[in-house]
Structure formats: C-alpha cells, structure tokens
Amino acid sequence: MGDAFDLAAGWLQEHLLLPLLYLLGLMQWEDVSYGWALFAVYGAVQVAITFAVCMPLERWRPVERWPDTRAVTVDVLYTVISRVGVLPLFTFVLFYHAQVALNGFLADHGFVPPTLERLLPFLLDQPVLTFIIYAIILDCADYWRHRLSHMFRWWWALHSLHHAQRQMTFWSDDRNHVLDDLIAALWFGAIALAIGVPPLQFPLLVLLLRFLESLSHANARVWFGTAGERLLISPRFHRAHHGLLAAGQRSCNYGAVLPWWDMLFGTADFGRDYVATGDPTGEEALASGSYFAQQWAGLRRFAAAFARAGRSPIG
Amino acid sequence: MQIPRAVGLALWLLLLSALPAAASGLAFIINSGGASISLVDMSSLKEMGRIPLLREPHHCALSPDGKSLLVGDTVGNEMLFFDPLTAALQKRMPVPDPYQLGFSPNGKFLVVNGLARNQVDVYNAASMQLLKRFPIASMPSHLDYAPDSSRVFVSLQGSDSMVAIDLNRLTVAWTAKVGKTPAGVLWHNGKVLVADMGTDYVAVVDPADGHVTERIHTGKGAHNLFVSPDHKVIWVNNRVGGTTTSLDASTLAPIRSYAIAGGPDDIAFAPDGKLWITRRFAEKVAVLDPKTGEYETVDVGRSPHGLFLSPKGIAAASVAAR
Image (cartoon, rainbow over all chains, first blue to last red; front, side, top):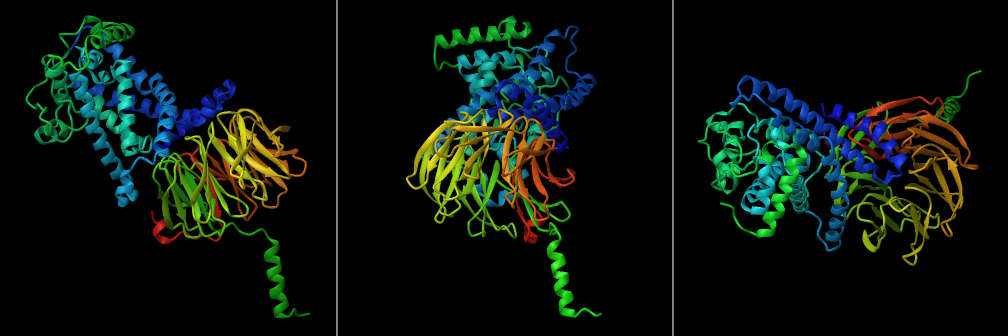
C-alpha cells in the first residue's frame, strides 16, 4: 500500500514540483520538495481514511446533534491546511536550514544525536519495533507539551483555540493556532535532535497514529472497554479533556494516543461520560469565528497574556 | 578433417570471450528514502533482500583495495563498510553527514561531502583519520579528482559554484561560478565537466581557475554524468527532462537521447554493456540497453540513489534472506 502512495508522491514531484522549481530557478530545493510531496500525499490519505471511518461512526452513534454545523466547516479547513498543504510546506522550508545549521554546530562540537539502534543494535533488523519505541517516546513528549500548554497563561491563550470548539468532531484535531503548531514543531524538532528520530522512515505507521488522534476527537459514543481504554485513547477518554469543566489548568487526559502518561502522572480520568465540550472562559470568536478571526483572536490573547506575565498558572 | 580437442577447446574459449559477458552478479541499490540497500540478482533482475540502514543513505564508493564498499548514511551520521562480494557488513563508523564520497586515484585520500552541513572532509583513506574539514557554503554535492590526485573538484549546489581543493597543501585553490545548481562532476581529458541541474547543459570548466569554457546542451535539469568503461561515451542524466543523453567523449557532441522517466540519477555499467540507472521517484532501476534504447526495470525501495555493481558478487545467505 505504501508503494502506491510513494509513487503518487513521485509523480507529484516529477510532473509538478520539479518543473516548477526548474522554472523558478530553485532546483536546490528538489530534495526538500520530494519530502514535502511524500508528506502531502500521506496527509491526503490520512484525511481520506479518517473521513471514511469517522464520518459513519459520527452518523451512527453521535454524542450530540447540531442543527447548524458551520463551525465544523472551519475545522475542515484547519485539517487540510495542516495535513496536506501550507503547514507542512512551511515547516519543511523553515526548519530545513535551521535543523541543518543546528545539527552542524552540534556535530562540530562532538555531538551526534544518539539513536536507539546504536544503543540496541538488534533493533536494526526490527524497523517496526524500533518505530513503535520511538512512537512511545514521542507520545510521552507530546503529553508534556500538551500539559504545559495548559499551564502557562500565554501558551493557553493560543491553545484555548483548540478547546473553544463546542461542536467537536474528528476534524477538530488540527484546529490549532499557527503559533501553537509552530511551538509543537520546535518541541518535536528538539526531541528529534535528542534521540535521532526517523522523520519519514515509517509513513504508514505515522498515518496510523495521526488517524488515532483524529478518531479521539470524533463526535461518537465510542469507547474501547475497561481494559482497552487503558491501552489506547478513545473518543470517550479524550472528550473528557475537552469538557466544559476541564478547560485550562483544570484539565485531565492530556495524552494523544496512549493513556499511559495520564495514568502514570496522575491526570487520568476514566469516569467522565461524553461531556459537553468547549471553553466557557474563551471569547466567542475562537469558537464560531472564521479561520482568520480565530487566528487573530488567538494572537491578541497571546500578546495580552505574554505582556502580563511569564510563568503564571491559570486558574 | 578432425579438429584436435585442444584446438577446439581454445576456439570455444575464444568464441566465449568475444561474446558480451552475461551480467551475473550482485547489485547494491541504495534507497535513500527507504533507509536501506536493495540487493539485486543481476541475472534475474530480482531483488533478493534488503539491508536496513539507519536513516538516509545516498552514495557509495569502493575502497582502493577493492575489499570494502563504503556507504554513507547522511542523517544517520554513519559510514558503513560492506563486503562487495557478499554484502556482509564489515564495520560501522561514525562520520558526520557523509553525503557524497570518493577515493582519490592514488588511493591516499577519501573526500566526503556533507551537503546538509556545508562541509568537505578530507580523510586519510588508509586510517580514516580526518585530515582537514573545509566549511564551504553551500551544499557541497558531487566530486571528482584530477588524475594525479593533486586536486578534488566539488560542486556547490546551493551557491552555483565549484571549489577546487589542493590535496597536497590542504587548501582551497579556487572557487568559481559554474552555472545554476551544479551537481555531477567528472574529470575528462584535462577538463572538468559539471552538470548544471538548474539549466539544460553540462559546463566545461578549466581546472586551472574554474572558468567555464563551453556549454554542452543535454536536457532540462542536467544532473549527473559518467564516463563509460571504454572511455568512448559520456552519459548524462537529465532530471527534469526525464532523459539520459550520450555524448561522444572525444568531441562532447550529443549522440542520442533516451527517455528514462522517474528522475534518472546515478549510473553504473554492467559487463554486458547495459547501464543501470536509478530512477529516484519511481522506486525502480532502469537497465538500459544502449543499442536498442529499450530498458528493463527492477523494483527496489523508496528513492533509489547511489548504486554499485559487483559482477562476481553473491549475497551471503544470511543477507539475502532479509
């Protein structure tokens, strides 16, 4: 299956991107453009699979029904921008040179990012197992990024955009402020530097993880049973994180794919049952504004919070 | 009249040697996007196994004694040494950003280009001790040497230039503009040829000072170039045009153009006269018969880049089984 997606990315590169780069005199970016083509194709497939699975689930067992779903339409736009279009391109171009410069500086000073495979050579023959271990490490890192984004007033000003949605669906996973996405990219860039994580080595598994993240936001009465809830994050578990009473620092269930970190660090709550979502403390533009209105409101709140104070937990 | 047995045998051997050799052996195809090496049986054109590497390998070079095939894993910051006959791993060694690599003709130096880190490293080939690092902007890409090993010429993809490094003094001899996005480099008849990927030509460069004396038009995105084993033909891969162009090595006049879709990149020459060409975006290798213009394809991993043909190679059972 992966081969077909790779070939689609190759086609995009050969017939669209290369001629464009050649025309613009930017052929030195050809490797980066191929990376982006892979990212975009796998992103499009992610969206398609998520839609094909989650939409029937939401129709079959919805938690809520809404007469007007315009707010959801904005989330669709977020998803497309985040998974297929502008954001990956921006991230690739912006971070490529920054990463290269930083890697080079560190290498000149004797630091080459360690890899799991070097520490545990038997993993070289076990690429899937290696990826699963990397995925667990990254999921733990994401738990802490997410938890911190609720703790700092300035960060919450950005992240509250994600929580403002009262009509949460599988499309809501990518509903983030661009600065929040940027911080996340920096966060994972730093982790990648520390553990030498493979970027596009296992796109099908990345696709699966992103699918699970989207599924956890679905407007569906779905849970995985008492044991299953403790293995993988379900829509029921993650919905508690988006609950009206869980906005800001009061929140719980910060995990993205695995609930283990919430269980380990004392933030798991398995007791809440399909609560209403949203952030009652946020402004209306964040919930029902257009894409740009949401981004502008987030930026304004971020500037105000940042001006007010550094590390001040919100209540 | 009966032909004596010994004479008959001699005639048979003579006949065999006159025929093109069958391309048996082992091909190493480096999948840069798949972080692996595909091992291909050169007779059946079938992939026999895949060796997993760390992150992003690109190119390879045979050691001067022919006993090791060095493969650079750029993002993995690692050089891997393989037995070119069996594909058995001999050793791994930390080397920062080994993108393109090549041994000098006298076997004394190994030059490693760090494309991502803007550096050219010169190693003592015997000890693998780093003699000097040249921080050079930007994107040091391909390389070739003067036949007397006095200089190495490196294309700088990000700054439209080429740098010549004096290997005796370990100093930069010159840096000069040679055309847009230069990639493949080849020393040929007292000149340096460089394929300018941002254009449709190969620039002919004076090795004394780097000035361009001539431009040979081959096809859009001229990317890499190789001389045939008999030194009669120069082969140029044109990345954007999706073609491979043959040039008369004595006159540099174009002879023929072959359509090779999927981003043609590196070339290796098989004993049967066929060209093995990696097709970066098609996950395939084209095995081109230059006489007919037809090619067969070999399925390999993602983004095949560098390659090496080992006509006497047979993959060790443990390697081929992967």
